[in-house]
Length: 255
Image 1 (cartoon, rainbow, N blue to C red):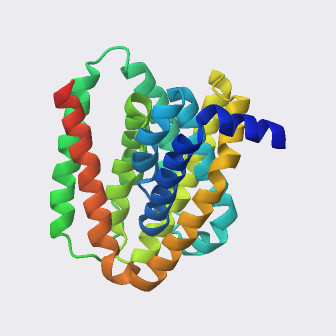
Image 2 (cartoon, one colour):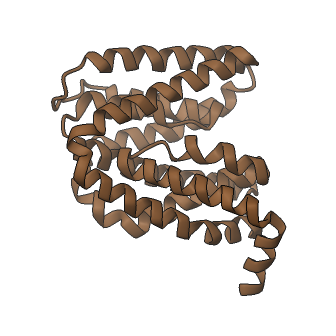
């Protein structure tokens, strides 16, 4: 095992591994504070040094590993009732998205998704944070949209983030619900990756090499949230969501 880790480290290289650790440290801190944003921050760096299929496996496995080790910190605060229809519908949406990918212009679809996220951000900016009971069918629709985006772009987060920020007035509950959703999404993703043959021994060793940076960032992020979450959570979460919308739109326009 030690020899395999050393061999994987040597294949990546010291400076490249330092860049990966720095990206994972920042991404895990962002995730621990907001409940989302890990893949957005980590994937661009990981994809520079490993194959895309390995990058998505590493991202999902690190998310799941860190979530399982820290689940006691967020699970009690997560509203559970809306999560079941969201997660079930997201599975169906992912299948539909994968099929849709064969028949639509991905760049055009991506642009409309990006603009939709930005429009939702503008609405959320004017929302006064307060607990809201979602109307019938809204959680299921959210899950379908999340799965659709996952199947087409491998970006499941925006619909769920918008749903949570629109229905949860307490920062602690918003963050806990998102952390729980992405933990469950990582399980679904790894099952799909396993069926697709994406799981490799290199991905496993990279997962082990990345976990120390993940845990440090996670610990710092939880500490920062405990101190500043009630004051800064919504502001920072909206900023990151705006960044997601802008990046999706710019990527579509540049294609």
